[in-house]
Image (cartoon, rainbow, N blue to C red):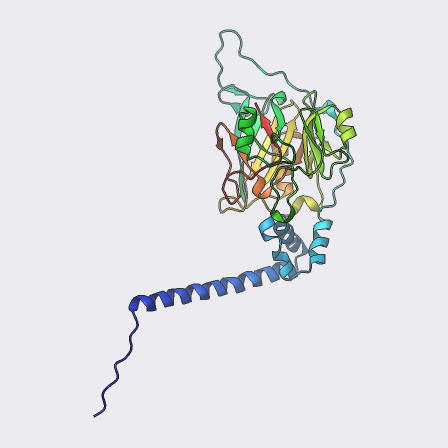
Length: 351
């Protein structure tokens, strides 16, 4: 009489884990195929505008700049980038369009309190600083309005070309109230330390990176008027620039928004600096790469600046560098891995 073999039974826990693992692997494969199919449609589909927007968004994202090259060659992606990054700022800033308004001080016996500026924004505590929410289709952000432009300046780490500072540490170094990140910086292969700015930089009248700016320059002169354009160090001296950084592109020049294919290139977090006709400085930070806020194009940032009355405005370094700090805390939602500030070479600060 043959003995019946006992059936081998595995642990129910092991079987459950196997099934879950199998489902996860299957889901990853399906999502991967879906993602590749979607990318193929974007880069090989019938819409060049959609393709170019996707490519520019990825190329401005250091962690994902390789993705377009799954279906496009390096030459093809570079051609798209070059076509959408041909900037030619030829119009000079007309400084007569800016009349810096004297800071209002409470009269004798008058308590400091809410005040409306000429554009209808309310300075709740009368300190000359206004924080406004920015809400548009697809993105949200914050705008800081500094009514007295003389309070705005560029800060940098103690040692030029050394290690960069987070925005929080930059604010503390200068005893400032707050600020936003400024210009770009050399970051070869993502290994830069944030201490060496890219392009013409001026801090308290001292010029760094002699010669022509490799990017659009944005800076305040001795009369607290914001200049935006293609400046050299010689231009900076002639215009008596006291503080400024380089990035770009220009968003608004002499009250007119800048237009062109590069203005609609890519959806990312954005930082921008501008000035109204009354001299007030506008500091903008738009969140991006997050569920609550996808991000904005340069054109979106331009439109926000125009909405707030900018006569001149310039885009600053964006992406994971976009960060805004005020009154002891970050008031935007940075997309950096840390959720706070990267090490920066400079920043626009205010006292």
